[in-house]
Length: 88
Image (cartoon, rainbow, N blue to C red; front, side, top):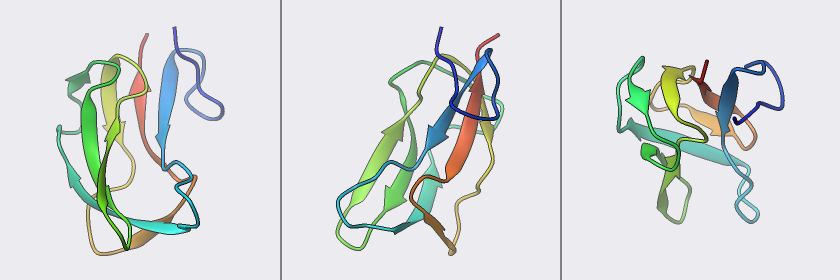
């Protein structure tokens, strides 16, 4: 079972913006699944955009997705928790 580093507890996992080179901020372009949906580990769930490219991030675990940062026009920092996946 996947565990989180902070906040989601032992029955969950966090989807964070990974470090990608020198990028410090990204834009959440689109959620590919709806908040509250069941996801499978490794399934693409969100599209983020850096100044250079769009990238899909995958679910860190199988379970129910809980979106914390909606898609929009505001950039968010690398390391930000975008969503949690409850696995319990």
